Amino acid sequence: MPLVVAIVLHEVGHDTAARMLGDNSLAEAGLARFDPRRYVDPIGTLALPLVLVLIHAPVFGWARSSPTDTSRFRNPRLDKALWSLAGPMTNFFLGTVSVGLLALLLGVMKGGAINPATNFLADNLFNFVQINIFLAVFNMLPIYPFDGAHVLEGLLPPKASREFSQLAPYGFPLLMLMLVVLPSLSPDFDVIGRFVRALATAITTSLLGSLNILG
Image 1 (cartoon, rainbow, N blue to C red):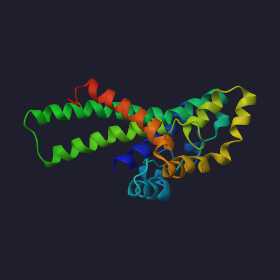
Image 2: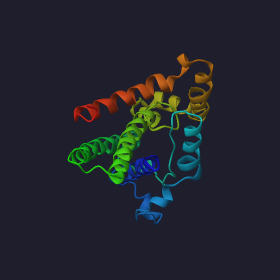
Image 3: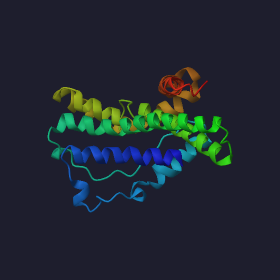
Image 4: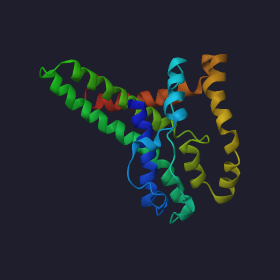
Protein backbone atom coordinates (compact mmCIF):
# COMPACT_ATOMS: atom_id res chain seq x y z
CA MET A 1 0.00 0.00 0.00
CA PRO A 2 2.74 2.60 0.76
CA LEU A 3 4.18 2.02 -2.73
CA VAL A 4 0.80 2.48 -4.43
CA VAL A 5 0.21 5.72 -2.51
CA ALA A 6 3.69 7.01 -3.41
CA ILE A 7 3.23 6.19 -7.11
CA VAL A 8 -0.21 7.80 -7.30
CA LEU A 9 0.89 10.97 -5.50
CA HIS A 10 3.90 11.17 -7.82
CA GLU A 11 1.47 11.49 -10.72
CA VAL A 12 -0.66 13.98 -8.79
CA GLY A 13 2.48 16.11 -8.48
CA HIS A 14 2.81 16.17 -12.27
CA ASP A 15 -0.85 17.13 -12.67
CA THR A 16 -0.57 19.95 -10.16
CA ALA A 17 2.53 21.30 -11.88
CA ALA A 18 0.85 21.11 -15.30
CA ARG A 19 -2.04 23.27 -14.09
CA MET A 20 0.34 25.79 -12.52
CA LEU A 21 2.38 25.98 -15.74
CA GLY A 22 -0.63 26.77 -17.92
CA ASP A 23 -2.07 23.47 -19.17
CA ASN A 24 -5.77 22.90 -18.44
CA SER A 25 -6.09 19.59 -20.29
CA LEU A 26 -7.13 17.81 -17.10
CA ALA A 27 -10.11 20.11 -16.50
CA GLU A 28 -11.10 20.04 -20.17
CA ALA A 29 -11.16 16.24 -20.05
CA GLY A 30 -13.50 16.37 -17.06
CA LEU A 31 -10.87 15.01 -14.70
CA ALA A 32 -10.36 18.02 -12.45
CA ARG A 33 -11.89 16.30 -9.43
CA PHE A 34 -9.31 14.23 -7.57
CA ASP A 35 -10.01 10.51 -7.83
CA PRO A 36 -7.11 8.20 -6.85
CA ARG A 37 -8.67 5.26 -8.72
CA ARG A 38 -8.07 6.79 -12.13
CA TYR A 39 -4.31 6.79 -11.52
CA VAL A 40 -4.11 3.06 -10.85
CA ASP A 41 -2.57 1.16 -13.75
CA PRO A 42 -3.05 -2.62 -13.48
CA ILE A 43 0.47 -3.30 -14.75
CA GLY A 44 2.57 -0.40 -13.49
CA THR A 45 0.86 0.21 -10.15
CA LEU A 46 -0.01 -3.35 -9.14
CA ALA A 47 1.48 -6.22 -11.15
CA LEU A 48 5.03 -4.97 -11.86
CA PRO A 49 5.84 -3.93 -8.26
CA LEU A 50 4.61 -7.31 -7.03
CA VAL A 51 6.80 -9.19 -9.53
CA LEU A 52 9.83 -7.06 -8.64
CA VAL A 53 9.30 -7.83 -4.96
CA LEU A 54 9.12 -11.55 -5.70
CA ILE A 55 12.37 -11.56 -7.71
CA HIS A 56 14.12 -9.28 -5.18
CA ALA A 57 14.78 -6.57 -7.76
CA PRO A 58 14.56 -2.81 -7.06
CA VAL A 59 10.86 -2.03 -6.78
CA PHE A 60 9.35 0.70 -8.92
CA GLY A 61 6.20 1.28 -10.90
CA TRP A 62 4.06 3.90 -12.53
CA ALA A 63 0.57 5.30 -12.37
CA ARG A 64 -1.78 6.02 -15.23
CA SER A 65 -0.76 9.42 -16.55
CA SER A 66 -3.21 12.23 -17.14
CA PRO A 67 -3.68 14.10 -20.42
CA THR A 68 -1.05 16.82 -20.61
CA ASP A 69 -0.22 19.16 -23.49
CA THR A 70 3.24 20.55 -22.82
CA SER A 71 2.92 22.92 -25.79
CA ARG A 72 0.49 24.93 -23.65
CA PHE A 73 3.14 25.66 -21.07
CA ARG A 74 4.14 29.31 -20.95
CA ASN A 75 7.78 28.39 -21.58
CA PRO A 76 7.47 24.91 -23.14
CA ARG A 77 11.10 23.73 -22.93
CA LEU A 78 11.92 24.96 -19.42
CA ASP A 79 8.44 24.28 -18.07
CA LYS A 80 8.55 20.72 -19.37
CA ALA A 81 11.64 20.20 -17.24
CA LEU A 82 9.86 21.70 -14.22
CA TRP A 83 6.76 19.57 -14.89
CA SER A 84 8.92 16.44 -15.08
CA LEU A 85 10.78 17.41 -11.92
CA ALA A 86 7.50 17.80 -10.01
CA GLY A 87 6.98 14.03 -9.67
CA PRO A 88 10.33 13.20 -8.01
CA MET A 89 10.13 16.34 -5.88
CA THR A 90 6.69 15.25 -4.68
CA ASN A 91 8.18 11.94 -3.57
CA PHE A 92 11.07 13.70 -1.84
CA PHE A 93 8.62 16.01 -0.06
CA LEU A 94 6.47 13.06 1.02
CA GLY A 95 9.53 11.23 2.31
CA THR A 96 10.69 14.27 4.29
CA VAL A 97 7.26 14.90 5.81
CA SER A 98 6.98 11.22 6.72
CA VAL A 99 10.26 11.43 8.63
CA GLY A 100 8.75 14.20 10.75
CA LEU A 101 5.57 12.21 11.34
CA LEU A 102 7.60 9.14 12.24
CA ALA A 103 9.63 11.15 14.75
CA LEU A 104 6.41 12.39 16.39
CA LEU A 105 4.96 8.89 16.49
CA LEU A 106 8.11 7.40 18.00
CA GLY A 107 8.04 10.13 20.65
CA VAL A 108 4.49 9.11 21.54
CA MET A 109 5.50 5.44 21.61
CA LYS A 110 8.40 6.18 23.96
CA GLY A 111 5.81 7.70 26.26
CA GLY A 112 4.21 4.30 26.57
CA ALA A 113 1.72 4.22 23.69
CA ILE A 114 3.07 1.00 22.21
CA ASN A 115 0.46 -1.31 20.75
CA PRO A 116 -0.18 -3.21 17.48
CA ALA A 117 -1.73 -0.11 15.88
CA THR A 118 1.22 2.22 16.62
CA ASN A 119 3.71 -0.48 15.60
CA PHE A 120 1.84 -0.96 12.31
CA LEU A 121 1.75 2.78 11.67
CA ALA A 122 5.45 3.20 12.50
CA ASP A 123 6.44 0.34 10.18
CA ASN A 124 4.41 1.80 7.32
CA LEU A 125 5.74 5.33 7.84
CA PHE A 126 9.29 3.95 7.79
CA ASN A 127 8.55 2.04 4.57
CA PHE A 128 6.90 5.16 3.11
CA VAL A 129 10.07 7.17 3.76
CA GLN A 130 12.26 4.57 2.06
CA ILE A 131 9.93 4.11 -0.91
CA ASN A 132 9.52 7.82 -1.61
CA ILE A 133 13.21 8.62 -1.41
CA PHE A 134 14.04 5.66 -3.66
CA LEU A 135 11.38 6.71 -6.21
CA ALA A 136 12.66 10.30 -6.16
CA VAL A 137 16.22 9.18 -6.93
CA PHE A 138 15.24 6.39 -9.34
CA ASN A 139 12.96 8.61 -11.40
CA MET A 140 15.77 11.11 -11.90
CA LEU A 141 17.78 8.62 -13.96
CA PRO A 142 18.39 10.29 -17.35
CA ILE A 143 16.82 7.32 -19.15
CA TYR A 144 13.49 7.37 -20.96
CA PRO A 145 10.70 7.12 -19.91
CA PHE A 146 11.85 8.42 -16.50
CA ASP A 147 11.44 12.02 -15.43
CA GLY A 148 15.18 12.57 -15.34
CA ALA A 149 15.37 12.12 -19.11
CA HIS A 150 12.64 14.73 -19.67
CA VAL A 151 14.30 17.13 -17.24
CA LEU A 152 17.59 16.77 -19.13
CA GLU A 153 15.79 17.15 -22.46
CA GLY A 154 14.29 20.44 -21.28
CA LEU A 155 17.61 21.80 -20.04
CA LEU A 156 19.80 20.89 -23.02
CA PRO A 157 20.31 23.32 -25.91
CA PRO A 158 17.66 22.82 -28.63
CA LYS A 159 19.86 20.80 -31.03
CA ALA A 160 21.24 18.55 -28.29
CA SER A 161 17.75 18.17 -26.85
CA ARG A 162 16.37 16.92 -30.18
CA GLU A 163 19.24 14.46 -30.55
CA PHE A 164 18.81 13.21 -27.00
CA SER A 165 15.05 12.72 -27.47
CA GLN A 166 15.80 10.25 -30.28
CA LEU A 167 17.02 7.83 -27.60
CA ALA A 168 13.47 7.47 -26.22
CA PRO A 169 12.65 4.18 -28.06
CA TYR A 170 15.70 2.53 -26.48
CA GLY A 171 14.90 3.58 -22.90
CA PHE A 172 12.89 0.58 -21.74
CA PRO A 173 15.27 -2.05 -23.20
CA LEU A 174 18.17 -0.21 -21.58
CA LEU A 175 16.31 -0.21 -18.27
CA MET A 176 15.70 -3.96 -18.46
CA LEU A 177 19.39 -4.44 -19.26
CA MET A 178 20.35 -2.48 -16.14
CA LEU A 179 17.71 -4.05 -13.88
CA VAL A 180 17.82 -7.71 -14.91
CA VAL A 181 20.55 -8.70 -17.36
CA LEU A 182 23.65 -6.95 -15.98
CA PRO A 183 23.06 -7.85 -12.29
CA SER A 184 22.58 -11.50 -13.31
CA LEU A 185 26.03 -11.47 -14.91
CA SER A 186 27.87 -9.95 -11.97
CA PRO A 187 27.07 -7.91 -8.82
CA ASP A 188 29.65 -5.43 -10.06
CA PHE A 189 27.33 -4.60 -12.97
CA ASP A 190 24.34 -3.85 -10.72
CA VAL A 191 24.12 -0.15 -11.57
CA ILE A 192 20.81 0.35 -9.77
CA GLY A 193 21.97 -1.38 -6.61
CA ARG A 194 25.41 0.19 -6.46
CA PHE A 195 24.46 3.75 -7.30
CA VAL A 196 20.71 4.47 -7.18
CA ARG A 197 19.91 2.36 -4.14
CA ALA A 198 23.12 3.48 -2.43
CA LEU A 199 22.27 7.17 -2.96
CA ALA A 200 18.66 6.66 -1.85
CA THR A 201 19.86 4.81 1.27
CA ALA A 202 22.34 7.58 2.08
CA ILE A 203 19.64 10.27 1.78
CA THR A 204 17.18 8.23 3.84
CA THR A 205 19.77 7.56 6.54
CA SER A 206 20.63 11.26 6.65
CA LEU A 207 16.98 12.29 7.01
CA LEU A 208 16.28 9.71 9.72
CA GLY A 209 19.51 10.45 11.52
CA SER A 210 18.80 14.21 11.54
CA LEU A 211 15.89 13.53 13.91
CA ASN A 212 17.73 10.82 15.86
CA ILE A 213 15.30 8.20 14.56
CA LEU A 214 18.07 5.73 13.89
CA GLY A 215 19.38 6.13 17.39
